Image (cartoon, rainbow, N blue to C red; front, side, top):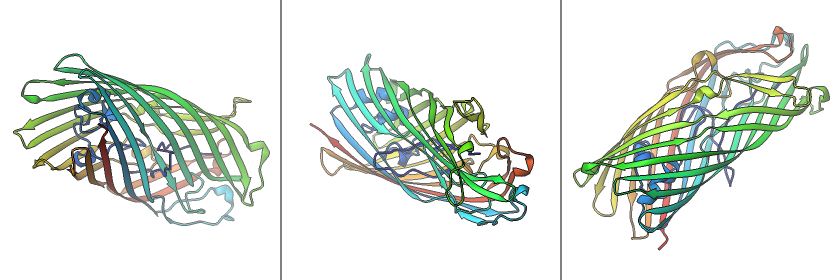
Length: 429
């Protein structure tokens, strides 16, 4: 009946981001305004500011003074669907409106995050971050030709991350953090209530989960830094309701009620390197692996009866992201940055859905840092993501209904993504 799709983002004054953008899948890389200029290369081996906590908590001990960092990311997403022969369910008996054959599920959104770092002496440091490691929102016109596979998909969450770092010696620093997340999933799509009779189904579930992150930074001869970090998976048992109604909004009680969705968000490993080249340049590199295969088949269950309300086939594969970045120090107050990255999608073409029309993408980025005073740092960056035309050829049935209730979506997405970030960092003493 309902069809589930995932998205995680910030909920303190937040609006989340549509599907095929930023990092591949539904992860969000927009965690720091200073890192975007490098395409987030070398993030786990660097301590540019307090936001380094997200990529490697060990970096906290590399800051020499308490610091507050606040960032805002503006993400302009185009997710334009063009129909190439989609078909409504045959059980509609030709009585259903076709709906829009062109629809843009994207929008302009804003994502904030904030961090505090507090060194205690030369060996110990504390930190706290508020962020969103995952995120997704897609919303199509209603009605559109693919509405039986999805209309609106939104997942929002708050991630709170206290952390501790300790310097073992001049060469090794380690860190550990705890992550608390509260997630909410809201989904809607069209359903057939009977032959030629259309309705709507909406799912609204939420839960809390705990995880952790840890890392180490090694400082080698020639000032080479190597960083290794890990973010754990999070197990959710999302609970709430499914509501099925007629187009007029009249509830269909037998098809509605309590719903449970068990899902695991993936863990990840990041290996970073940073190498100064003389006194003005620094080269950064990064490779990240994400355990997306945790998400395969997801069931929406009626907890009272154990019966399945919906079967959600994702079939995600594990992914790798590779990035290179360069920093150029132009005097004492300015730094200029650039980067490039290849971001692999967990979505194969044969399992692509309207809720996540995702594909591989290239990042091309530029950025700058300005120090107007000893206590204030201003970072700004821009990223353009290059995504090719994304085809979709998906047949999806309605759980518990005959094959004639299945719809077919055939078309192409024209995806565009541009990200602009600004960040302010204040030294607190």
